Length: 100
Length: 201
Image 1 (cartoon, each protein chain N blue to C red):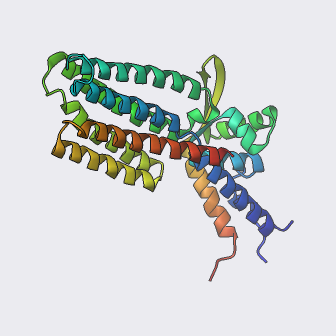
Image 2 (cartoon, each protein chain N blue to C red):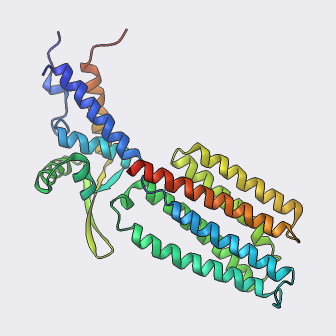
Image 3 (cartoon, rainbow over the protein chains, first blue to last red):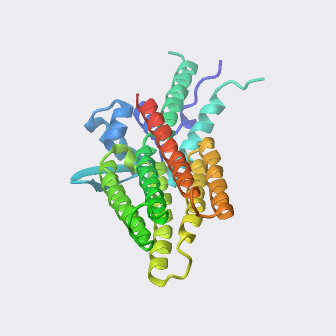
C-alpha cells in the first residue's frame, strides 16, 4: 500500500477548516464571514486564524463593506487560490489508486 | 484512520462545501412578482384608458407607465437594501444577476424616458421592445445560473414580443398581453421563491 507523501499536498490548504473554506469559495467566489463561520462550523477566532493563513499565502483576500449599518467582512478566493486549490485536488487525485 | 479513509473524507467535505457554495440561495423571486404585477397593471391601465372606459385622454397612458417605472424602481431599490443585508448578497452569482437586471433597467429606462422627451418613436414602441429586453435578461440569467427552464421562459418572452409586433396593440390584445406578461413574470418569481425556500429549508 503506498504511503502518503506529505510534500505533495499544500500545507496551507490541507486542514479541514481551510479545505472547507477553499471548497466553498471555489464555487461561491466570495462569501460573508458569518456565512463561512456557519458553513465550516467554526468559532470567530478559529476561522479568523485560518483565513489569515490563507490570506498570507495569497489564496484569499478580505475586505470590509457595510450591509445597511452593519459592517461585514467579505472573503474572496484569488486567482492564486483557485490555482492552488486545483493543484491540491490534482495532488489528492494522484494519491488515490488509479481506476481500471 | 488510514490515509485512504482520510482522503475519502476530505473529498466528501470538499464536495459538500462546493455544492453549498454553488447554490443560488437568493434568486430574488420577489422582484419578478413585483414587476409582473406592476406591468400587468400598466397594461390594464393602458387598455382601460385606450378603450375609453374611463374619461381620460389617451396621453395619460404615459402617466400610467411613468408611475409603473417610478413605483417599480423605488420598490426594487427598497427591497435590494433589505437583501443587501443578507450574507448571501455578496455571492458572485447574486451580484451578477443584480447587475443584469440593473443594466436591463437602465437600458429600458433610457429608452422610455428618452422617448418621452424626444418622441422619436411611436408610443407603442416601448411595449413592443420590452419583451425582447426581458427575454435577453432571462437568457443571460438562465445561462449564468445554470437554470435551463429560464431559457425556455426567455423563448416565451421572445414569442410574446413577436406576437405583439404581429398583432399590434389594439383592442382586446392589450389585456391578453397583460395576462401573458404577468404570467411569465409572476410565474417565474413564484418558481424562484419556491426554489429558494427548498434550498434554505
